[in-house]
Amino acid sequence: MAKDIETEVQSGLPHKDYHDPPAAAFYDPAELRKWSFYRALIAEFVATLLFLYVTILTVIGYNHQTATGSPDLCNGVGVLGIAWAFGGMIFVLVYCTAGISGGHINPAVTFGLFLARKVSLIRAVGYMVAQVLGAISGVGLVKALQKSYYNRYNGGVNMLADGYSKGTGLGAEIIGTFILVYTVFSATDPKRVARDSHVPVLAPLPIGFAVFIVHLATIPITGTGINPARSLGPAVIFNNEKAWDDQWIFWVGPFIGAAIAAFYHQSVLRAQAAKALGSFRSSSNL
Image 1 (cartoon, rainbow, N blue to C red):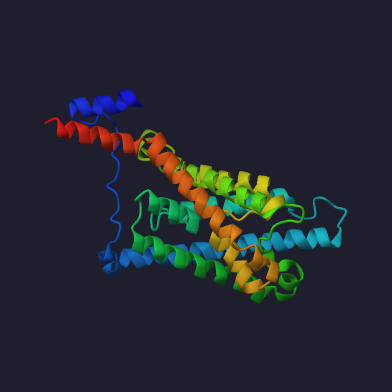
Image 2: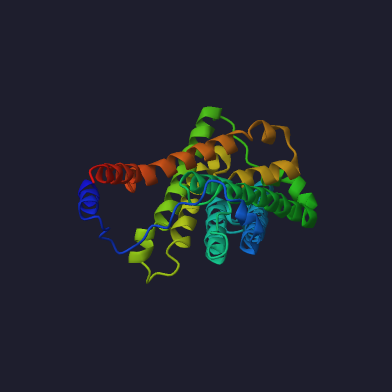
């Protein structure tokens, strides 16, 4: 890493086969006058709606299977199926919307990208609002179509499981979201995109797998949030006291995890701070 920085500073020209996009403006009101901005908001809203609709239906189906005590283990999706539903939907939806909005579908992902100057404040806030509204609408659609099952099987809400402390739940959400957002940064890194351009679905695939793997690990603890919109949508529609009591875990944890992932990737792996310092020292010597 130090060698790469030294080479770039001494020559004055970057010896690399990729180009980092310029940092997004912190506040860019001009975006409010662009149709592409509102098109991206619509894409985030619809994608999050579809994500919650499919995944919450899967969770309710699993709860129905376990509640009826069916002896046939193949008569339902199981925990593995739930993990596949979440990971598979993220893979599909990121693939579909990446070229329009970036395919965030998660306020924690948006927050991490905002901290890394990948999106502006206006776009970040707009995305988060669209994602939350999409999540609420998706869960509302599930309740409208299957009200009796929805009410009977807890509406797919995220709650801390019995036997686990709030600290354990918070830690699970922080680490799980770190894995997800770290994967997002790595899969969309300009260097990796340039060198793996022959694989057109490279970015959505590892992101979907990250969601899948984290669900396998943390479903028994928190039901797996790692997405504040996914946790808030069912809480609003189901309106359960425990769901609201635990709700802060599914916001604080993912936002901390996303912030750590952004710092780790940008400042440590990509050495942005070191490169900026090296560039400053080079210009000072001229």
